[in-house]
Image 1 (spheres, rainbow, N blue to C red):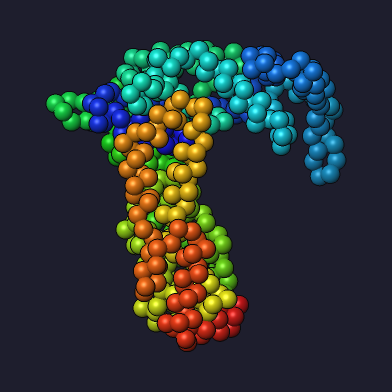
Image 2: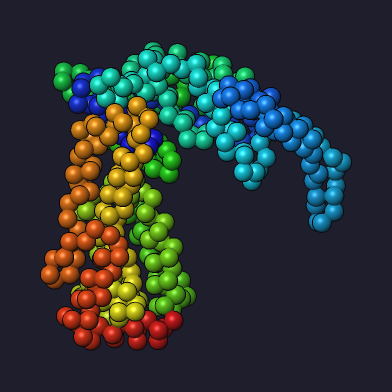
Length: 389
């Protein structure tokens, strides 16, 4: 939701000639430093029943820890007065409640318009925080309020790892104003993003042009080089490619809505490496490389077919969950979101017959049919794979 909302904010600012100011904030040791008193206050604010609050209070007041070194306890018991319990099922929910408390003073009308009649003043995902405003001046006010509340729960901002982005319109054209100063309570200026700069938010690079999918190609090229130069056989290389390297790229390619031509180019890089690993002609049939092992293929995922289907699933799931969320309901009605949906609904065709697939299973089934009917010698791929495995 946050990714699409942030994209919709940027798109609306550009199309409506409205200014936009964003602050991406990094919180020092968030989970380790949050005060335990604030956990109770956050629970009270959300109406958590008293028996549960009493249990949580007892749980944290009685928590103790010891330091061990070399299998020996080297300190006395130490009382923990801050932080949430690492690995505890309740920790994420408690921390989220505290962050909701921190941002409660930032009103929606202080934020920027994401669609007609819907405004957003902040986006939260655990400790990843984005403050949103129409102008740098309003953003500065929101930042001061946020830092005051942050101090009240035992947390502090790390300005050197935070960033701000300001979009302005001049003579009908939008541009980035990196000369603005957004400062914390100590007067330290947050780094300002320029036109070419980006900030890593939720694992994605975000800048004045939106979310960037291009870094995925660098990750792929580096991974292919490392796999190629490592002392591995062909089977091991194919396993690492299909089960580690390609899945590693999916988060960026799906959420950043990478276009198909970009995915096609990445597939070419993958096939060039695969054909060299297994010793088959570089222009071997696609079914031989992307078909399932059971049907005689090498079972290498084809990004240009798999990623668009995942993008479509994400967008449809988001639309189904819009229910009682006014902001999300407004986002999915925007022109920005409509264009993403339209692009994801374009036909995904596989095989020489041009069969339209709507799921990964259909993609695999068409490759199986292709190998069975159009490439009777496709079973050679099984021999190649298992010979080296």
